[in-house]
Length: 361
Image (cartoon, one colour):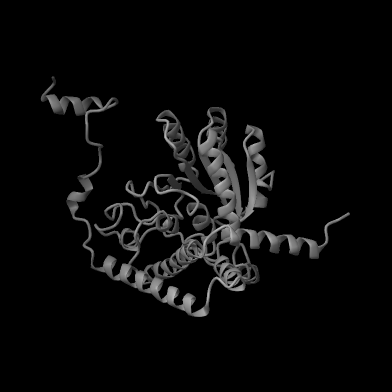
């Protein structure tokens, strides 16, 4: 017998209730705070970009917060994460401060990459956040290499790799998944499917619409999740992390989400490849409002708690903006710093050795 709408609603309600019960109230509030921080941070970044304080490319994460926060809240501090160029919120969720992320956006020396990386290249060795990467899909084989390192060193760690759906239709994706499955590497690949690769709808470029099915070619566990539901994302990522820790099994997760803003700050929100009605309809599933409603219906959040949390987050973001504005710009000498790694390691270029020994020796 076909499943009725009422039955589906009941099942969904039961699933939400079970996920709410799986975590303590302080865990729920920590996730909500991080989602609010991500949204307010990106709103402030948009304002700063419009004022000319942020230059270059700037890709905002507004609408996709449930994916990063849901996934990264399932990790330990010693686990790794790596992302694409839409990376501000992932950096914050991995523990980087709003100050160092905003200063990097401003191109200042107090930024996490000393002002030389900008929006697409957040990085923190201390927090095990291995960067945003500007080359589409470039981080996928790198994450696989991190997974190999974890296995080689016999460490109890995992790596989560974020990328957009447009990165799937290229060789590096398939080569990486094949190696991860063959060698049993503890990598969780998360496709943030917001449906549009820049301005091109996914269905126009993909012979297989359901990305999660691609893992079948590599005998890899996979699933599609609602990327607008932070609890659903977290619960399934936790399962993938458990598999990865237990025996190195990698997982492909397709998080179906939506960005409420343009591909970048130079891209219109609507009117070119999607309509205003499309965007407004998507906003009805806003992941932050959805999570707030879930918490309030379960008596886990009051209006006063929400208002206090949002006010505190706004203060953090305002402080980050002031800190970035007062941070100095890199001097000319910064062009020559951090070009080569220190240390005598295998693979140094021949002229490095000549310079070290002097002359032609």
